[in-house]
Length: 458
Ligand SMILES: Cc1cc2nc3c(=O)[nH]c(=O)nc-3n(C[C@H](O)[C@H](O)[C@H](O)COP(=O)(O)OP(=O)(O)OC[C@H]3O[C@@H](n4cnc5c(N)ncnc54)[C@H](O)[C@@H]3O)c2cc1C
Image (cartoon, rainbow, N blue to C red; front, side):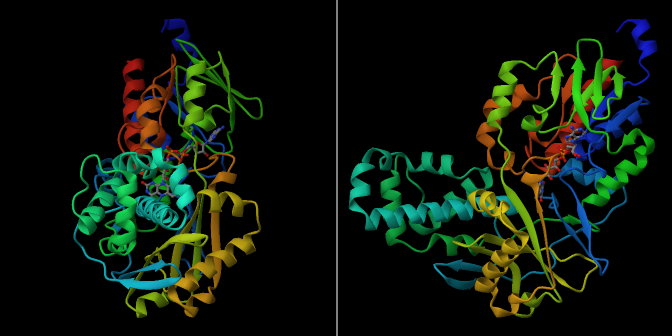
C-alpha cells in the first residue's frame, strides 16, 4: 500500500453484511484498533438469525438457533457477552408417524447427538429407502429395467442420498442394529430386500433420536444484537451494496442510493450465489461463478404453531416428531424460556417448501396443523397463532440450508470459493472449512478472514 493511498483511505476495512460472520469479523478488527464499517442491506442485524417477539413477551427464532457439540467459538462469544445458554425445554418421548400411524417412542440419552437438520436428512433418507423397497416388491417391470442401478454399492447410495455426515453415521448404526454391520460390497438391491423383510428402520432411528442441543436464553439474536451494540456507529443499516470494485490495493463499494465507500480491504459475507447478484468490477472469474452456481441455497420455510400451553408435555411427549408424509415432517418444542405458551416448530422443506411457498400463508398454516394433528391428536387443532419465515423469498438471503445438506459440494468447490480476490475477502458460514453452513462455521470463518485482513493491513 503506498503512503498516499493510505492517507486518502480512512477506512481500513468495509464489511458487506451484518450477519454473525460480518459482526464477528468487525469486532476482531475493531479490537485491534482498525477502522471498520459494516454495510447491512436490511434494517436489522443478524442476517439468518432473527427473533420475532410475541404479544406475551415470548419469542420465536426464525433462523439459526441451535448450538451443537463442538460449537466452541460461538460458545466463547456467548460467554464473553455474558449471555446464558439453555437446553431443550423438556425431556419426553418422540412421536414417529409411519404409514398414517403415530407411534410413541421412548428417547434415550445415549448415542451421539443429531442436529435437527441431520434428523430431517436421516428421516428423508430412510423414507426414500423404504419407498424404493416397496417399489422393488410391487413393480417387477421397474426392477427389471433398473437392474444395473440396483446393483450399485449400498454405501454409495447412502453417501449420495444422505447429505449430512451425522445422518450417514446414524444410518450405518441403525442399519447395523437391524441387520448386522453393513458388509463391504453389499448392493442396494440386497439392502432393499433386507428393508422389506427386516424391522422398521424409522422406529429404530427414533429410539435414539434425542437431541443434545442448546440455545441462547432470549434467542440467538441477542448475540448479534449485543455484537452490533458494541460496534455502535460502525454498523450501518439499510445500506444495500449493489456494486463492488476491487484491485490489489483498495476496494470501492457502491450502495443502492449511489453513495460510494472506499476501504483498504473488503470482506463480503454474502453466501456464494447471492454474492454473484452484485456487479463486480473487474468481473469475478468465470470459475468462481460456476462454482457458486453449484452451491445452491435450499428451500426451507421455518414455521411455528403457538398454543396456549405445551399440551404435548402432559402426555409425556417431547414435542419432537418425525413423519413419512405431510407438509411438515419434523417438529420440535422450541417454547421460549420466558413463555407459558407452547411453541411447536417445524420445517417445510425441499419440494414441499418450493410448491407451498407459492401458495397462501393460510394454506401453509392449515397444512402444518393437519400434520401435527395426525401426529399429536386433535388437541393440536387449535393453535393461537401461526408464524413463519420463508427464507427463499428473502432478498438478502435467497434461500437457506443449502450448504447444511451438501458437504460433498463443499469439498469440491468450497476451498476455492473462500480464496480472496485481491483485497476482496469472503467470509461466512458457506466459506468455512469446519461446520460449513452452520452458526459455528460463520463465527470461525469471520474470525479467520478478519485475521487475514489484519495481517494484510499490518
Ligand atoms: C431457518 C434456519 C435455521 C437454521 N438453524 C440453524 C441452527 O439451528 N444451528 C446452526 O448452527 N445453524 C443454523 N442455521 C444456519 C445459520 O443461521 C447460518 O449459518 C448463519 O446465521 C450464517 O451467518 P452468515 O453471517 O454467514 O450469513 P448471513 O446471516 O446470511 O449474513 C449475510 C448478511 O449480508 C446481508 N446482505 C445480503 N446482501 C446484501 C447486500 N447486497 N448489501 C448489504 N448487505 C447484504 C444480509 O442481510 C445478512 O445480514 C439456520 C439457518 C436458517 C435460515
